Image (cartoon, rainbow, N blue to C red; front, side, top):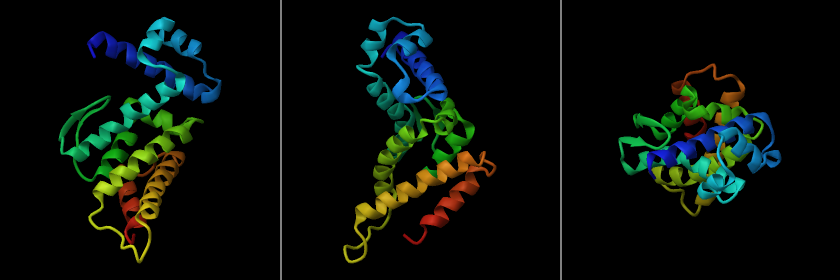
Length: 183
């Protein structure tokens, strides 16, 4: 993708994020997105097939950054530019805390369930790769454990954001790690 295309794509993302903070996802129209992004309808459809596809791509852009750190890429860039230091969970908490790419805006908006749902799905894969041991079949099904850890992470983020993020990312990471320690 050339620079002009990336610029247009991010203008659409910015317009979409702005609208998501203002109103429910179902009530946002493609017309409102293109008006806010100051682009033509054909340009929008050259980048995204539908509003639902736009949502999916926005989530992919936001979250694939974190998941790329699993591949051992120390300097990785999508929407974010950083080095992946510490645990992958701390890495995520730090991006939320810094409000990278208005991530905090998305997580605190009325539509946050949409983003947390997409994020949870990606987290399950991440957690599966991060876990050093698997649960024996005599104990609990691995899928249940993965879902539980991902749900705990999502709820930790939801709680942290709703409590105005008074604690630093390191403390939230400690809380999360304590919650899942015995799993």
